[in-house]
Image (tube, rainbow, N blue to C red; front, top):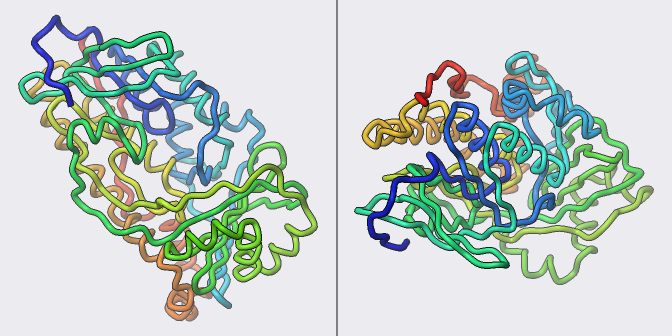
Length: 404
């Protein structure tokens, strides 16, 4: 964080650092509300990224509210309306309740989804610079006032009333403003996944045994993503013996799916992560806020990252409303956003940690007597989607009036 001498007024109302699932919707919503927004991303778009792809119903309902769901469907990504979870010898099949009238989840490839979201932000009036790396946050009198950036051809600075970090788990913005963790747990799993052809899947499928978890879902181009999770302590050994460890884990947790995969073809390399961090960082401070993985990250085993990023973007934009240009009112709006975020994501965080311990035997014993109760099954799938009674409603930014 660089102390910056007083300068001219901000050229932008907001600078959003990161143009993927947290940053692009945030920028788009603020621009639609009438704010001047600059969005920066270090990657050159379109570009793929490590992801479980899944957008749960609360996330697709937001896409629908934003007028983007049809564009996601138009990529050829199939809708996902049902799910199956097998924990040891217990199988639960069903579907989450619709959210906002939207029944389907989707799992689009990220180079398609992220480009679509960035284009929607630009359509709303956002100035977008890709291949532009933010290196620091500028501060005056303890308040963030802009960013320093660098490109292949040089560097510079830009100023704004609000700097929003949406730049991932290793956020430069979070580090620069010293956004300390307010809740944190050690990594519990590591994961490897690959894309397969000739392994048809029409729903989300999850398989768990003690020490292993497998998830699979359909995505673009008729391909299926298959992810295999291992205990974090096994990461050094697993990465040394790929792809054998991946296939062995698949066979251990999902023998039938393993046989289907053997009849198909894996396309491309295996992708993996051994840094499945679990934390909440402070969500906002003087002149800055965090959305997506920059402010909150958890194990990907519940595939909740994209949905949580959309929800944070919607809450931040709605809570800011017409208050961005008034520092005192913006501070109060930031506090409301922080409370929303922490309350909205608390249950999913706890559920994710429980699942990431890879103790399917304990889960199996706990649910074996309930799987024949339709009300319990419905509540199970609603909670798995994050659409149960703990869901925090997202205020509609369209009800806000932003002064010119």
